[in-house]
Length: 249
Image (cartoon, rainbow, N blue to C red; front, side):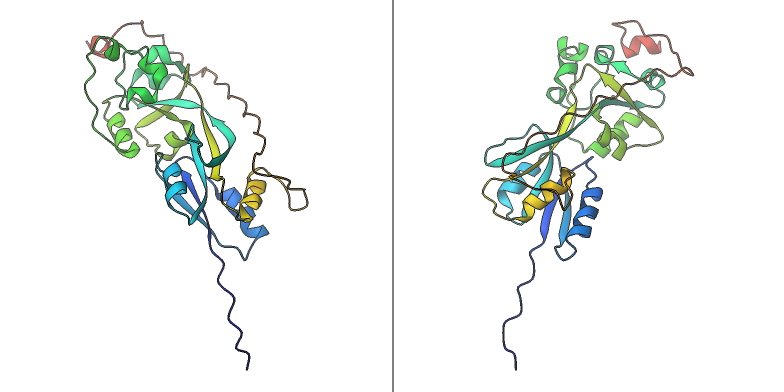
């Protein structure tokens, strides 16, 4: 009778991802290439990825929105995202295909102004001290407030798409820095599957040489999308400096 111990089950390879990242294509490639290696994808909040990697050894890698504290981590940049302003369908900005951040200076931002420093440095309500505190909200709750015409949000395009509704519209905004998605993992994690996952994300095939992944070269930034003004909608520019209260009179 064979009394040899049964092989230990393979530890799942856990990868977290922030809102807006869609890791399905990489997960599918992993499952085709490594059908016997379980891959678990775990969504996390924007502020969690760095802490999850530090505190939970079950998590091997994380798709993060840069910048993050890189102490103890390897991080490779992957791609950039166009910022958009989310407004109610009835808002004048909804008629535009693109708008500059300085044309949003008189709006009320339903976020911490420090999250969008380009808006903060121009904002009328910040400059004259008339800004009132915004209560803590999830992105979903903030978008609901936008739909009620309580203010605006400036978000990465992928996040806006995750929370799209019929009563709001996302308009590309210029003058705001693009956000960037990266892939992070601990420098002291010896798991060889990390190299495999990096290769999949970077588009390497099974036959390609994998090389070192400890300090992989950054991918070139994706080309910034060019927004074009619709011929069907050509609203007149609003006068600079006019407050929303003045426009509604």
